Length: 154
Image (cartoon, rainbow, N blue to C red; front, top):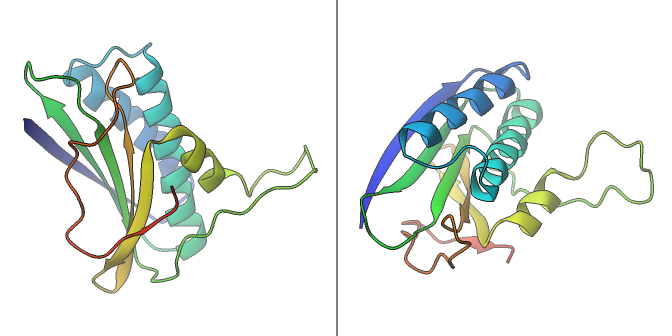
């Protein structure tokens, strides 16, 4: 299986999240992934959550990376990685009963929508990653593993 790796530098500005979503949609379209598919919608949502966490909680730029399977091989997962400047472990929080709360659900969504996710220290910061199955929801067992130890939440 061949994998196309693309990345985007994201500035430490919450307005960059919408740019990251547009960039992901463009990369998916170029990779032949149907924009209306559940996988595409899930990827855009997950990228939005992970990039938001990186720029809001660290106040520093981040790097968004997509690893897209290419070619006629069987459906494979798409991997999303966001590297930021904080070594603080990501911790899913539960927003609780407050339906009007505007934060606290990001990693909970990632946990629910992705087949797997985790993080590992990377340089002076960390890298948060997740994998989302192919267009038919195929499991992601064939995905590349991170090179460093991983704390997985699922």
